[in-house]
Figure 1 (cartoon, chains in turn purple, red):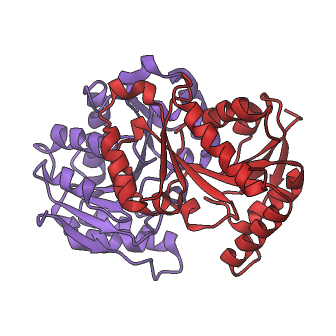
Figure 2 (cartoon, rainbow over the protein chains, first blue to last red; figure 1 turned 60 degrees about the horizontal axis):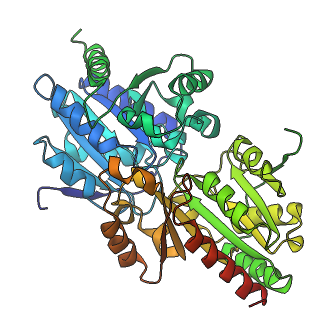
Length: 224
Length: 224
């Protein structure tokens, strides 16, 4: 699709990723743009959740999307169908984005034109959690078929996230997934974690999630 | 559980991972042990599939299991209930195992006492695919809820694997998952890939998979 701009992002030249991430946040604050870093396993429903979120918010705030992927443009093509600006970041095999790579994307998309820029990170519960991208908030999706033991097995990502979306609750009857247990395990890792059970497919639970996100964006951008 | 031996594996000291992996395979060949490297996303059903596989094969061949995980012993505890020897490898935050880390595990478990040693790699579709562990065969699991587009988005792991297990076919009616398409996409990456649709939950399709694995083990160990 010729609507999709593909950017080959290179590994950061900055020795200190955290310092670079803080510089990005300062620039975002100044220009009143909220950057959300969305992380999950492959196949948890990041893109579908994002499309639903865009549909709920696009009449209220200006949204741009940066899709990170190792090699394809599958997700950016789907996002483009919502009519909002999106670019595809190719990591060239890298399993995560760092602050420098994120900054290349922010410049390409022209972040200052948006209230909210969403970075859809590479599908992976391990490596993306280790790198501060400069995002204002980190959000992760865990889907019901993945199992409720994931906070025990992948602790870091639950620790660094501000919100946890539990997706695919429409298939709860078909899986051995304990919603109370996953909340308990996740709060063991991070007592302040906001948890939103949703079904991106049916729309159930979406409003609580999008209300929270909109409030975060407004607060950061100084419009509350 | 005090039955579980936990080994903290350290990143390899070997500069040349491929050469080290080849040395491991030579030792395995000499001692008639088949090492299978099992990879997948978090929550695709690696451990459940493994337990079913062990149940089908443990009366015919001697099996040992090395569970790799970042931080927990959840999986090794489940494997221990099958009655076969298992150890837990902790990667200390690392997102994959390399050949040197695998070798530390093989020595700890005493690989020469087994016909088949299974390495359950860290749940991740990206990084584990980049490191040859010394395994005789690489096997990956993709589960139905993850979606049929994964060979497009995570090409390398489909390229380096010998067999692809498509798990959770019992929930096919509840997901938009096209079995023909995933086979087509996977074979684009790797025309020789063996594909086994199964449900580790109901047992459907398990026999074709375990027959294939048993044949591979017998051939490698010179008992065919």
